[in-house]
Image 1 (cartoon, protein in one colour):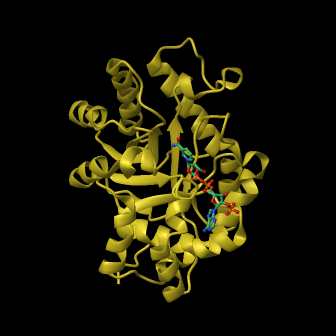
Image 2 (cartoon, protein in one colour):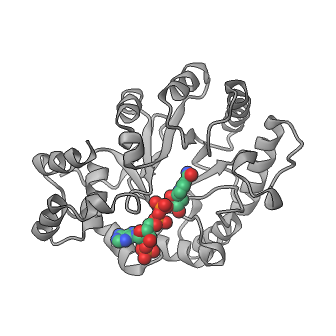
Length: 282
Ligand SMILES: NC(=O)c1ccc[n+]([C@@H]2O[C@H](COP(=O)([O-])OP(=O)(O)OC[C@H]3O[C@@H](n4cnc5c(N)ncnc54)[C@H](OP(=O)(O)O)[C@@H]3O)[C@@H](O)[C@H]2O)c1
C-alpha cells in the first residue's frame, strides 16, 4: 500500500504529501499553524507577501512548536519571493526601487527574520516575470540563496506556460524542484505540463484543488467511492491527487478537515478507481 506520507525531491529534500497553506489567515495564522502541526501536518507554505500572508505569524508558531518539542528540522518550510506585480503597493516588503537581485535578497532576509530560521526547505518564485531576462535575474538571485545554504531547493508558482518552464529548466543552474499551480479546468489541469514535470523529477503542488472543482466533488464517481470507503468527497479527491503524485495544499481552518486530511494515509484507491477519477479531469 502506497501510504508513505512523504516523498523525496530531486534535491533530496523530504516533502510531506500534503502541505498546510497559510494564506488569508491574518492574525489567526499563528494559532492555526500550531493547530495544524499538532494535528500531524509537517509541511507549511507561506510567502513574503503581506497582502495575503502573515509570514511572521508562521515564525511565532514555529518558535512555540519548537519549545513544545517539534523542532524546525522536522518540518518542511516553504516560502516565496513575490515580484512587485503581486504585492500590495502599500505593503511592499522590500525596496521597490532596488534591482531585482536585491529585491530577492531583501525579501529572503525578511522571510528568515519572520520565520525565525536560517533556512527554508523550499523557496518559490511566486509568478514568472517578463521579459524572460527579468525572470532569470530573479532566478539567479534565488540560486545564490541556495548556494549560501539559505534554501535547500527552488521552485516556481503560477507558471502555466510550458515553454517558460522549459526555458527556465534549460537555463537554470539550480533546476526547479517544485511547480505550484492552480488546479482547474481552465488549464486542462496542466495535463501536459504535469507530464513534463514528472519526466524531469519536478514535484507538482496544487492549490484551489477543492474550491475550483465542485463539479468533481459532487460527481457520482466520487460519491460512490466516498460511500465505499466511508470518506468525504474531499478526502477521496485529495487521496486521488496524492496517488498520482500531486502534493495538494490545504488551508483548512477546521479541526475536522485537518483530521480528515491526516487520515488520507489510512486508505488507498485501487488503480481502476484512480483511473475513473482521472477521467473527470479530461
Ligand atoms: N501560489 C499561489 O499563488 C497560491 C494561491 C492560492 C493559494 N496558495 C496556497 O494554497 C493554500 C490553499 O489554498 P486554496 O486556495 O487551495 O484553498 P483553501 O484555503 O485550502 O480553501 C479551501 C476551502 O475548502 C475548504 N476545505 C478545506 N479542506 C477541506 C476538507 N478536507 N473538506 C471540506 N472542505 C475543505 C475550506 O474550508 P474550511 O476552512 O472550513 O476547511 C475552504 O473553504 C493557501 O493557503 C496557500 O498556501 C498559493
